[in-house]
Image (cartoon, rainbow, N blue to C red; front, side, top):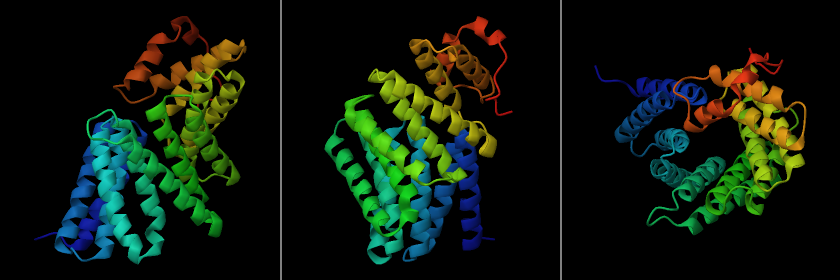
Length: 308
């Protein structure tokens, strides 16, 4: 018996949820396998119902999600391909259904990031990446002017614009710092941050902290890293430990050391402890952080920041 459309939609949604969970936990190969299945299920629906806008909308969403997994894996060409397809579908849908405009902007910002990180490859235009990022930000500025509920989207695309500047111009450049700071400001303006937005908020302030550290603005770096650690601690309590939590803690500890802050060693102890709780194999940078941290320091007890 052939699967019904309902069966395919349920399959796509279930696989997408599994991909999201695996992605957040750092199980990237598993996340990609689930995302591949979700895209295949959505493509099967479109193949059977090519004129159905709802089917194409679902496919665009699954492509957008898979592009995010490819980005995390560092496969920016594959991410760009999925983001480009997603953007083009949303662009056609938005011409007929204005409620799709925010999703079009999200896909355009994700496309911009992928293009920026792939810009060293032949045939990839850095100009295009900048233009897509600015267009996505402008779209959300216009949306927020009429509907404040769109503010989380504006924060997301500011963050991705910061990623574009970081990829093309380097860490700690004025453009990247300004975009990350704008993203953080938008998240703060929301008041209570929803669990769905908190991880993006944490990522934005962590990247802002890296930028400040690179620019040798150490007090600002410490403040931003502290805010990132606080947000990742809440993420851990709400949805589980994210691999960026020990990254933020190790950055905080290094900046605290440079400032002579007595809390530095405790931050590094906490970072080392949290790394031991992550799924193996570790990302290369986390393995380097683990190996770099002073083994003697691990004899100290983790602080109350431990989410367990």
